[in-house]
Length: 268
Image (tube, rainbow, N blue to C red; front, side, top):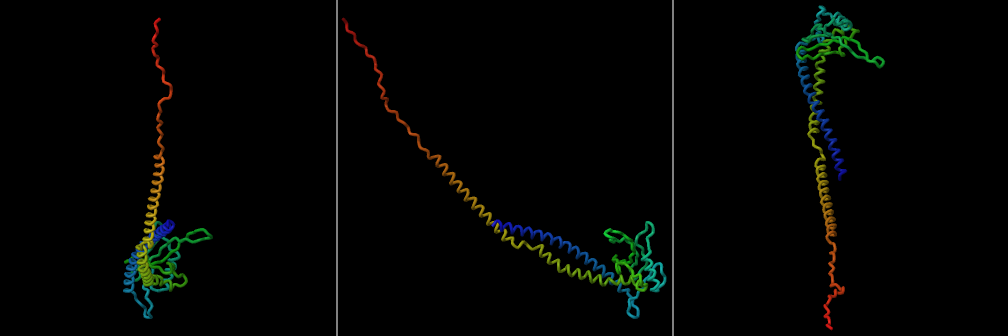
């Protein structure tokens, strides 16, 4: 029975640890859900702003009215070449920010940023600097990149559409976060049930503990009873001692001491 209790207590400890882990994951998921909802709201805001200004060419292609600070031409070839050169050669000035605003598109601000990237060279970590391009929403602060910020350097016309391709990802990003939210909504209730679920064998464990305690008391009482009986037997032997016989002295058989008698003398 004690072995059974040990097994149940071990299961209870394992259950308690699992509850703690589940509680940690639950708190993490709840925080992730709050963050996801916040991001979806921001993406919805950007999506609405973008689509309210979006224009199309006659053939149905999305128009790309990009405005660059240092380029006055609207020719895609010229815009593409400028962005390719900027991506390859731009460096921030001394003590200047590593990010520079270069234009705007559909209400989004356009930037180039110089960042350090890590790469593995024969088992050694090395660093190099690369420029990335991104569009940023003034409303939400979300940054939109295409191809991880790296522009197509082989085709200027494709390069000229880098920023509209980046901003256009708002739909896919929103869909991604909405899918993540659905998964969280499915998983959170299951974790909540697991955290709130009691140890299934709790009643069995409690009953076993009660039975063992009752058995211990019965054994203890029995042992005490046997000890008292043994003690009483010992005490009985000590009491049942024989009385020392009293020896009665008989009258002495020794000869009595003769008393001297006066002898009357004869007168002559």
